[in-house]
Image 1 (cartoon, helix red, strand yellow):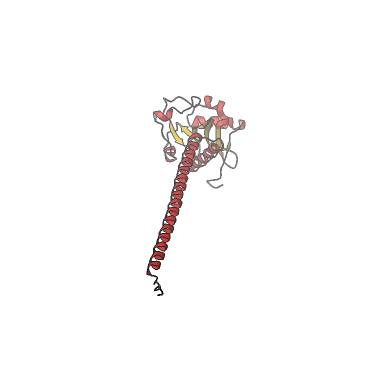
Image 2 (cartoon, rainbow, N blue to C red):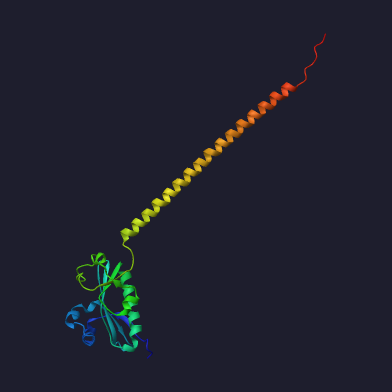
Length: 209
């Protein structure tokens, strides 16, 4: 079996005993996590043996990534990436705007997670934890209301530009009409002047005695 022969699936009740052993190896609180085993995505080999597990839970538009445990150190990088890809798929399905984690490995920083500042921590749902803890966060996309506001601003800008264009066209038409009228007046005036000059130059017949 090749080193990448594993698949990712959701944990089931049948996995609970194996997960407890994995959590013990990773020094995670198994007695707390066994009540939440349905949150876990597991990487399994061809014999359905669990190689790694990662917890993912969602609260509204927020998601928490937690309790990573990897049994196969030689496949750690591949297992990390595969579990992260699954997190992104689940987050998209749940319309998640922001992810949170208290994981400390450099992997999460490489994926874009940064320390959550106080202003951002106010967005943390209480169901995920308390804001006083060391949280890292990653914004996946903007809030729908912000997107709608941006679209409305763009539409308003485009409408203003259309109005400006219409006004410029209207002014152009008015100027064109004025120019045409002015040329017409000049033409009439020139024709009148020419007719006047021709009449003045017309020879007069001498009177008969």
